[in-house]
Image (cartoon, rainbow, N blue to C red; front, top):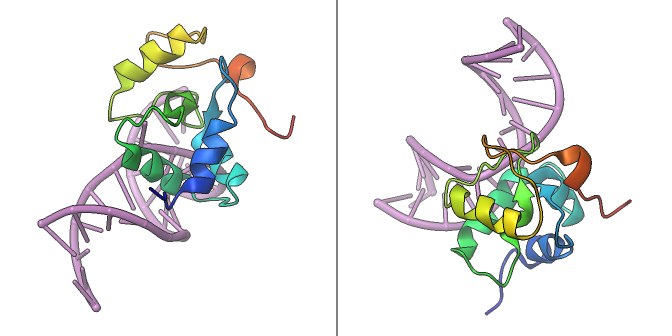
Length: 101
DNA sequence: TTCATGACTGGCT
DNA sequence: AAGCCAGCCATGA
C-alpha cells in the first residue's frame, strides 16, 4: 500500500541501528522543514508497523514523546544498544544521528 | 465544511 | 529555570 508519508518513513529508515534522531531532523531529512508534528503524526499512522524503525525517533530534548508505547520504545532502544535514562531520555550528544554528518 | 486535537519545536514570559 | 504561546498541517467527528 502506498503511504502518504513515504519520504518521512524513508528518512526514518536511514537512521542506522544504535542511533536516534529527532522529529525535527527527520522532517528536514524528508524535505519538510518545520513540520515536525507531521512526522509524529505520520509515525502514529504506522500503528506499530515494524517496517519502519519508528522507535529511533525522539523529541528535540532527547526524550521519548511517544504516547503510543513509550515503554515499548524504550525497551526497543535498549535492545539496540541505546542507553535510555529512567526518565525515558537518550543522550543526544552520543546517539543523535545527522545524515549530513 | 468547520472545530478540536495531536508521537513537535522554538521563542517569549 | 520552568512554563506558556503561536505556528505548522493532517485526521476524525
